[in-house]
Length: 340
Image (cartoon, rainbow, N blue to C red; front, side):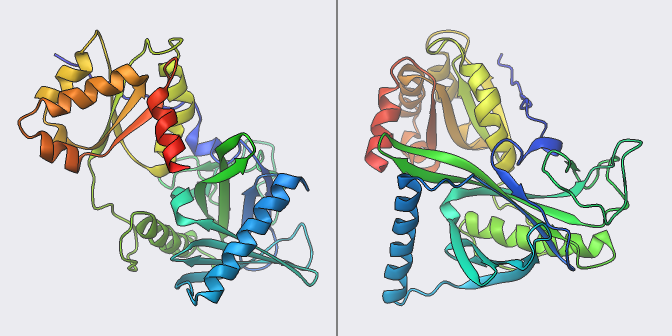
């Protein structure tokens, strides 16, 4: 008999997603609003190199005549900086942010492959004694608390709909590469009713979800994933220094939540437990397998799949991933080296 444990990430997703890194530019001007959370940009050699690389890439695309297909475009205003406007475009290349301020233009495109998900949220009711005026400026992300639409804590005085877009942008340095978490928050408030603003936000969410999933862009009211199966997570709690469970809780579970991917988490109990599990279970109940641990637990799962009579189908239909938590993590390093 096996047990399935579903862990809730320690991050309070309804209130704190988008507040872990970066600085916020908040708007309270005009009919629409945007709050963009981006990493702090320092005039370092690495940053200049990245900007030059991006500019060169855009020039190559333009020279090749590879024009992006634009699905949605909208203009947002920034009240904290006068004469500052963001033109946001959703294309088949990614999310393009074009900033125009005092005659200067700066453009950044977040590739689709770096975007993992997006969610529509609503502002949370403020605590007693704080201002609830709809014209009050939100000066920092720590003051903006959001909740799910069906929560009983939403602020009825704020008719805005907030679209949180989560991306992990690949950065390169002399030591290698790493993913930097970036959250873009679009605030829709063109209309006097929350339902109308939410409809606009949901339109953007559905289009982004479809593009990220590699599906044709349609115009539904709300996005429904084609594959509703959960992800199978197999975790070895004794891997490495024994912190695999903690690492999954703190660093991996929030990413699954941002991508809105449900999962079943199974903890191994003894040697070859994972091997036997995938050998005898109906693995097609899940959309893929993610192994949390070292090389040993990954090879257990792989060998278990090869011992099935339908091993060829299982290998072809079930993508596999590894979250390295072992002592050496040789396999994960090799995969990373090949992809870089």
